[in-house]
Length: 276
Ligand SMILES: C[S@@+](CC[C@H](N)C(=O)[O-])C[C@H]1O[C@@H](n2cnc3c(N)ncnc32)[C@H](O)[C@@H]1O
Image (cartoon, rainbow, N blue to C red; front, side, top):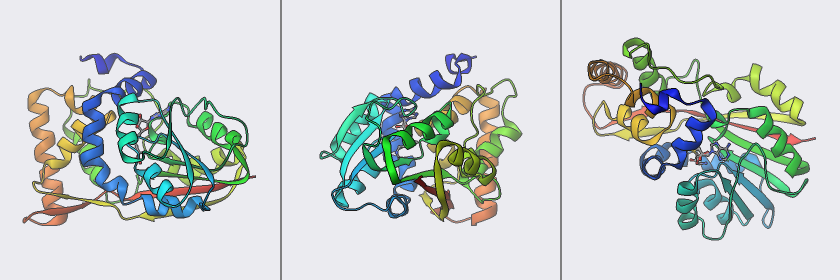
């Protein structure tokens, strides 16, 4: 067992995103799909020029960059210093803050919008982050966040995690934590948003995708540029990795044809709600 297999969910996520190589891989490869979600995330946040906006879980700054371009005064928060270094280069006009989305170091009612691009799947207690987002928003302010679509969606995420489920070593498991798609599932998200003090909820799907030059590239994207994917893939014995790679190749060729480059889907849901 590797060290990652011994960690609890919170420290797995914290240590994983602190790693400069993971941050760089996420920014340069995985986030090609996340970038396609920024326009809808900003639209649903209903940003007015001059608005004070918090971008929580800012990562390498793609949402903060879009908010600055929309004329907002942006505070961007992340618990990974490696990510904040990248965000500083991408969104130099944003104020960068090192902190935790579950315990925001800001005044009550300070912001008129809070955005969170793909942060919720990594937060050990999402209701705490929702409550904190509500606390720092003024009444009438808007929360807008993105989550990769799960059940029922054709997604490269399902190709990779399905292959791990079918061919991975069963002793390689993630620590207990929230599901990666939980906060775009209406039965989970709607009551949690209501309990935190949000109403007027909307959900919009973005058909984001990657272009890949070889059909097993998704394995590398998840191994090198994510935390859960790295924990599940780096700990596999060699023979299981061969089988996982083969299964992903079969899924890509079966769904998208034999000749590349391939356009593979990784759709997202943008969830937005008003602080009431
Ligand atoms: C998948 S990346 C998303 C980055 C960027 N927002 C985007 O849309 O591409 C998730 C980010 O959330 C940050 N993160 C995860 N849990 C966090 C927490 N509890 N508090 C602050 N940042 C957190 C990670 O460090 C990472 O930068």
